[in-house]
Image 1 (cartoon, one colour):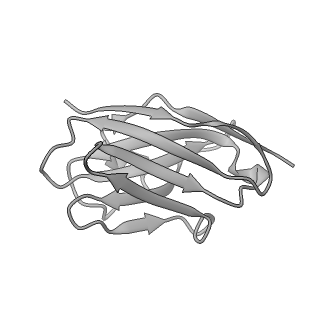
Image 2 (cartoon, rainbow, N blue to C red):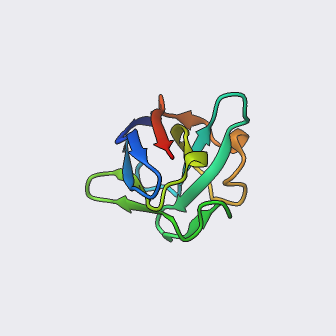
Amino acid sequence: QVQLVESGGGSVQAGGSLRLSCAASGVTYSTYCLGWFRQAPGKEREGVAALRTWIGSTYYADSVKGRFTVSRDNAKNTLYLQMNSLKPEDTAMYYCAAVRAGCASWNRPATFNYWGQGTQVTVSS
């Protein structure tokens, strides 16, 4: 059973940085797609970034390319999202997600069957 626990959210001024962590227990030796999603009030959940285990391929939404970096520490079984040059429009609840499959449809919430509880990111102008 996969369990995901996010941490690292908080409040920051525009232009600042945050690093989100997702402790992913149960993600073993099979291929998984590990994703980061966000959801702002009144908006749909949207894919931010994803990483395919074993191969290490990464995927990003256009809105975060060049500012966010997704990575994984295999020894710690932890997924990270380094967020730089944050903007007020990045304000949202951020969720970690996992599915035992590739990342062909990584930006669709319905692709994933494991979810964390979320961590809030607030960026002030």
